[in-house]
Each structure stands twice: as structure tokens, then as C-alpha cells.
Image (tube, rainbow, N blue to C red; front, side, top):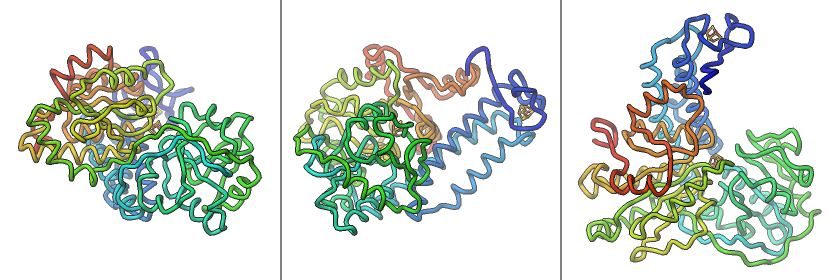
Length: 449
Ligand code: SF4
Ligand code: SF4
């Protein structure tokens, strides 16, 4: 929120013309408005993960109840207590963790336990369909229908951005035509989609209005929708699949490989070895560097940071900003890869499970573990993840590329003080600080117990 406009609320009929922008007619002040917005944005993030769980038939009444209660709190003249909203934001963090856990369960029970896999960034001969977004359900239905139509040999399916980790799940590996990954994060989609000859399917958020060069090949499904492009109802992909057969074929071309598919179920068995390496001083620091990609020059921070972290450290990553730095050769420390991609943004759940397990097995709390958490945020799912980390008690988290504008300066200052939130600055200076003072866990919070 800018200094000049500290709030804007127009939700009730008492609103001034153009909204209440200095103080509400009801008495709501800008800081309360900011906390209400912060809660609503966290709920949006939770809704996204929960919706994908629902797509697979997984529900949780506690999540439903919290969503209704939290939205109700923001109705006019219900609650003017700022502390209640800070508590609700932390509760949102707990519920967001439940939603991530539920979604992870939905994915593992539906598609199997992921295994690390090398994914080609080249192309295979044949017609192609490119799938972007986050919905594995949408991708699975597409692959199934291509098979049912007997076209598995003719149509190759390519993942884009956050769909990359699908390659690591056993159920997806059963489809020989799920061949490769095309392009990087959502930020570059207009250029990358223009260059792809076949139809493109948007399955969730982070899809943009298409350029004229590919608008006739653009489809959406589920919650995604565009002014231009066609929307698929009821998972019926017949038109899209037939469209693919009319588009030019791709030729076989080799491309570099990306490794993805780390998950707590496949990293937990390595825990003894990781602990030995920490005891022997061979792993000095664990960095969690991940989150959303954003078209902002400040995102070069994350690229630089991953480049300069010491060689005796490992990086755990997830979500789409990794496409800025996941092609670098990080090597390994005695067989433990130095860069582990856990997949989509919701797979931060795996990283949390591992951090808690590491603390338990080392028989000390996370404060004594050399861990630094550095997040990039673009949208509200990342906001939910931040709330989860705050709920768990993690302090000293770095966020960027910019501070959320929905916090008034007052609210931001309070959060910075209370939770030791740090805005990213200069990567070299920040790194020195991280190596000296990693993130820590506050006493009396869930991760400290
Ligand atoms: S809820 Fe309050 S701040 Fe919002 S429009 Fe109504 S009177 Fe204005
Ligand atoms: S990580 Fe965030 S920005 Fe990136 S595709 Fe997922 S939701 Fe969008």
C-alpha cells in the first residue's frame, strides 16, 4: 500500500464515493484494513491448494470451517481487534499447512510417491500439446484421453513451468508420451507459447492472455479462463486432442536435462547420511531458496545467491523461480545432490517435514541447525506459505523481491519486529549474515516443541 493511499474499502453501503480511503465510516482504520486484506490474501492461497485437493476427492472440514470463519471476520462491523487478525493470520498458516499436507496426500495416493527424475528439455518427433499451470488432475485426464483415443504414439505431451514435477510420479511415468519440459517459469510464457507449434492448455493460475500468434491454440480448463482461447468443460479434451493432430509436428531434438522429483519420502532415507555429513562438517549450511518467479529485475538476487552459496552447503528449492537457477551444475557432497528440486510451490510441505525431522534426529531445535530460508513471492499461494512458516515459529525469513503492498507501513514494521522478517538486499551482504545467523525458531511455537 503506498504512503498516499493507506486503505481502500468499498465493501458496504456506508462507503464514501470511490471507497473509504483514509478511515472507514464504520471506524475501520488503515492498519485494520491491511490486516483484513492480508488474511483474505492468505485464504486465497489456501483455497488454491485446497481446490486441487478437492479435484482429487480429498476434503477436510476443519479447512472449510476456518475459511468460512476467517471470511466472516472481515465482514463489516464484525471485528475491529487487530490482535485477533494477527492470530487469524497465524491460524491461516496452520490451516495452509493442513491444505498442503492434504494435497500432498492426494498426489501421493493418486499418482504414487515421486522419485527424482531427469527430464529432457528437448523435443520428440510428433504432434505436441503443452500443459501449464499446477493441476495434475488436468494433465492426467488429458493423457488418459489421448490413450483412450489410441493416439499415444502420435501426440507427445510437454510440461511447462509448475507442471514439470509431474514427470516424477509413477502414474505419470506410465504414459510414454509425457516426454519433455518446454520453457521456464510463467513469466516467459508468451514467448515460449508462441514458439510451440501445438495447442497449449492452461490449468490454473499463472496463465496470461495469449498473443495473437497462439490465441487460436490456447485452451483453459478447471478454474483457469481467458478472454481469448477456448474453455474446456467437464474434462472433455476431444476438441483439443483433434486440434493437436492438425498442427505441425515437432522434430526430435536433444536438450539439457533438468532433475526434479525430490520429496520427503525419498529424502528421508538419506537422512542418516546427511546427519553424518553435518557432524563431519562436510555440510555446513542448508539453504531453502524458492518461491515464485516475478518479472522484476530484483529477481536476479536469487540467481546470484544460489551461485555464491558456499560449496559445502545444499539448496532445497521449490516453485517456479528455480527456472532462473536450476540448470547450473551444483554437483554433490558425497553423493547428496547440492541442489534438490522438490517441485511445485505446495511441495514446500516436503521441505517442512524434512526440516522438522532433521531437528528431531539431531536432537536439537532448528536454531542450532545451519538453515536459512529465502523466499520469493508473486501471488497469494506464497503468502499462505509465508504464514505457515510464521505459524510454525520460523523467524529471520528473507522475502522478496519486494515487500507486500497490502501491508501498511505500520503493519509491515510490526511484522518485521515481531517475526524478524527480512527484506532481501544485496546477495553478498545477506549471505554473510545468513551464514552467521540463519533462520531460527521462536520458543513455544510448533516447531520448537
Ligand atoms: S466496511 Fe467500513 S471502511 Fe469498508 S466501505 Fe464500509 S464503512 Fe467504509
Ligand atoms: S510458483 Fe507462484 S508464480 Fe510460479 S507458477 Fe506457481 S503460483 Fe505462479
